[in-house]
Every structure is written in structure tokens, then in C-alpha cells.
Length: 176
Ligand SMILES: O=P(O)(O)OC[C@H]1O[C@H](OP(=O)(O)OP(=O)(O)O)[C@H](O)[C@@H]1O
Ligand SMILES: O=c1cc[nH]c(=O)[nH]1
Image 1 (cartoon, rainbow, N blue to C red):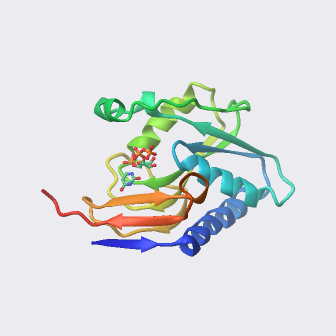
Image 2 (cartoon, rainbow, N blue to C red):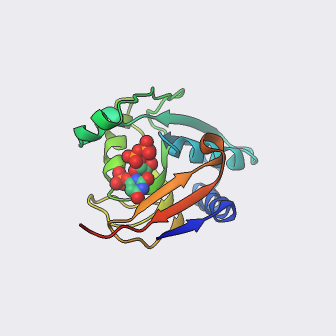
């Protein structure tokens, strides 16, 4: 069994994130840092929307593979890509951006990876989807879509730029 959300819901989710970021940051300089993979695409789409107003906006990409706490995953997915942070992180207001927030382990790793680049003044978290079931004391500051899921489900996100379509599929799985 699976539930599907389409392009309209994804666009609405990204617009919700952009509005909340616009409202809460009130035109102050911000740096969006998208987490590979697909967090970078969400960050890029947010950047396009937020760039419509006259503000200082930076965009970066973080690969957290080397900072994960599950080394098996790295063996199964050996694709290591570079991070690209083309601005000074020192004293910046960084908003980490990801497509899905689940256990929070990716964000824990992202905070570690980011600290290699400097000492930001503030780090916030924006996620397109919060599907719950945290295993770390990590919560988003900005959420696009709140998805009710069971712990065993898998949320599969496709985005136009990398997958050719905007789609969210919640694949329901039985425990065990
Ligand atoms: O909160 P968590 O439990 O860490 O889960 C969320 C992360 O899981 C997915 O990445 P995944 O590890 O599947 O790799 P991918 O981004 O390359 O698909 C997703 O893109 C998030 O980054
Ligand atoms: O359901 C999940 C869990 C982790 N990461 C995803 O992208 N989906």
C-alpha cells in the first residue's frame, strides 16, 4: 500500500517554507545550506523564491556521508560527493535544508559537517517533510509538510530537477 502526494502539494510545501523563512528572518542575510541528496534541490527552489526580494542570500550544499553514524550505509551507498559552501560560515545565519526529517541522525551529522567550515552565529533547520519518529533531540524550525507515518514506512521523495517529476510516495511497510 502507498500514499502519493503530487507536484501541487510539493509546491505548496516549498511555498510554506519560503513564507515562514521570509516572515521569521525579516530580510536579514541568510545562508541556505541544502543536504545532499534532494535537500540541495529544495534549498535551490527556496533560494529562487526568496531571491525575488532584495536581500543578502547565500546558497551552499553539504554532503554528510563521512559524518554519518551508520557505516553500513556508506558501504551500501559508496557515492561520495563534494560539499560546496562558497561563503564564510563564520557568524552567518545558516538554515540547513533537507527533504525529509525522520530520526534526526542526518541533521546531527550535518551539524558536525558544517562545523568544519566555521562557527555560524545561528543554525536553523528547514525540512520539506517532517515524518516524525525522532531518535535525536532535533526539531525543525520550518516545516513544509507534516506527514503522519508509521515508523516502518518509507517516504520516497522525487524532485523535478533530479528525478524528472515532483512526487512523494509513502510506502507502508509492516513491522517485521
Ligand atoms: O532523519 P533521518 O533518519 O536521518 O532521515 C532523513 C534523511 O534520509 C534521507 O536521506 P538518505 O539517508 O536516505 O540518503 P539520500 O538523501 O541520499 O537519499 C533524506 O534525504 C534525509 O536526509
Ligand atoms: O522514510 C524515510 C526515511 C529516511 N529518509 C527518507 O528519505 N525517507
